Length: 150
Image 1 (spheres, rainbow, N blue to C red):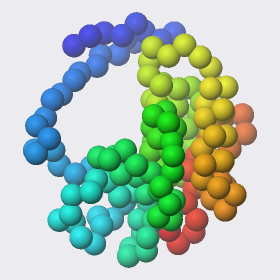
Image 2 (image 1 turned 90 degrees about the vertical axis):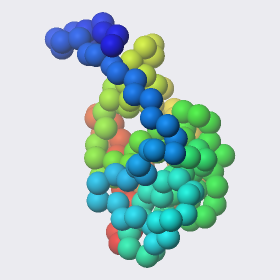
Image 3 (image 1 turned 45 degrees about the vertical axis):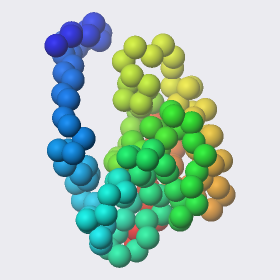
């Protein structure tokens, strides 16, 4: 393990890298997200699904593709990571600092303004009809809120 430098007022963190053969990895499903109806298919994660409805935002981590109502989005690496993180944790408020640490990594030199720029780009790419799903929580950060019933 490699210890990272401590953050002010916090103990040092230790990170581990675990390698698992691709054919032995269990499918990743966040808590509270139903499995797709055809569980046997191998097309990656399917987040944002409620019951048998098509999800509003679909994240396929295996292919690194995000789609809104079936329309694939042309996202940069960081835009994909940011959207996937928000969609995986719906209704949870993330501070800008948390997002920088989680999406950009501990070594990133920057501030919350970087997050604001990427969120603005994501909203444009989601389109006028769906841009509101990424909500600003004033003076805190952002959260993903799927439409009611989704």
